Amino acid sequence: MSARTLRHALNLWPPFLCAGIHVSHLAADFRHARVELRMRPWNRNYVGTHFGGSLFAMTDPFWMLLALHALGEDHIVWDRAATIDFDKPARGTVAAEFRLDDAVLDELRAATAGGDKVLRWFETPVHDAGGAVVARVRKQLYLRRKRGR
Figure 1 (tube, rainbow, N blue to C red):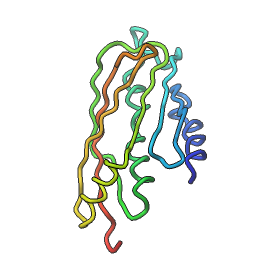
Figure 2: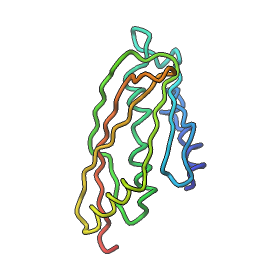
Figure 3: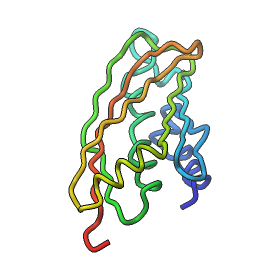
Figure 4: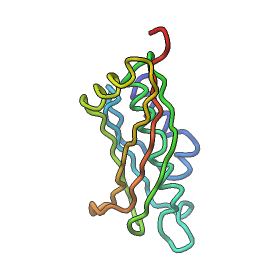
């Protein structure tokens, strides 16, 4: 599936569409993504700020998707663990960016070359429109090169 098609599919996916989550960019080489969460009456919590589950959901699949596509079909990539820390109340439109650079991909390829599993943490800050960090999401990926490849 092309990055463009995947971006459109994610934007129409009910958990994202209904939560106000919008994938504004997904690079053709799957090395960069930008996701926004727009404030809507149905995604506010009791005190009028973004629901924490929506802040987490906007970041949930992206490290796995980027790594899976960038490493190719000869690798297994799964989400293994996650944490979220809330730094300040989130209001308005918030955004998160994901970047997989060559050094990280080279590190992952080298670490999985022998068929061993690798557990790797990635951190994503979520920023408000003013650039302030409202939350930090950490995701741990399980990676392994497929046997016989």
